[in-house]
Amino acid sequence: MQIYCTFELLIKQMAQKVKTILNNFIKFGLIPVCMLIVVGVHFHHRSKGLSAWKGGAFGMYSTYHPEYSLMYINGVNYRNLIKNDNKKSRALNNYFYYPTKRNLDIVLKSSRQPADTLQIQIWLPNLDAKTSTYSIQLKNEFSYINSN
Image (tube, rainbow, N blue to C red; front, side, top):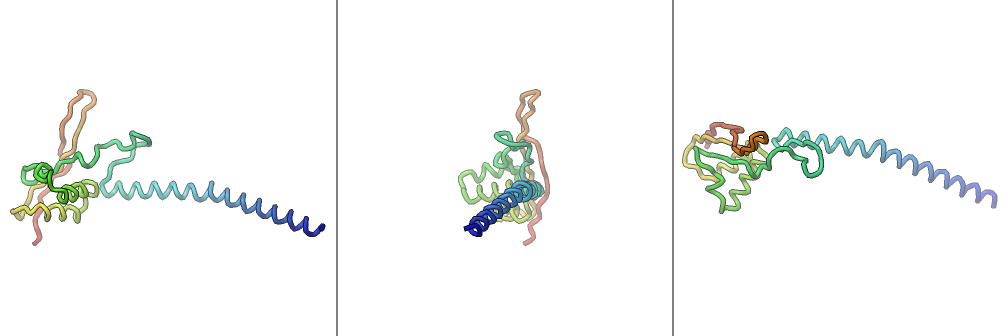
């Protein structure tokens, strides 16, 4: 009986140590690593052109939603041309969320532009809080030369 009680006490002590070790691992190991992963993923997405993170809750993103961006191809508002075509609109929104060369190629191939050289402008909304004026401002302008 004495050995059984000692063995039971030893098991309880080991279980308490394991619980403490697991608790410390979660608090001081797992949670900080998860936070660093979130920060790393954010900086990776930021380098790919997503909105800057400016805090938390409802004001988390301080820039306009990418769907409010405008693309002009050879002086024509491309979003107005494709507003009834869901496939082209998704391709354009995908480019605004992830502005990569590959996504731009998909947008331009789906647009079936007749010219080999295209003048492309990306415009973003701009709200001046001091004067309460809304405007659009040129974010990027470049020439695209079709490689086909």
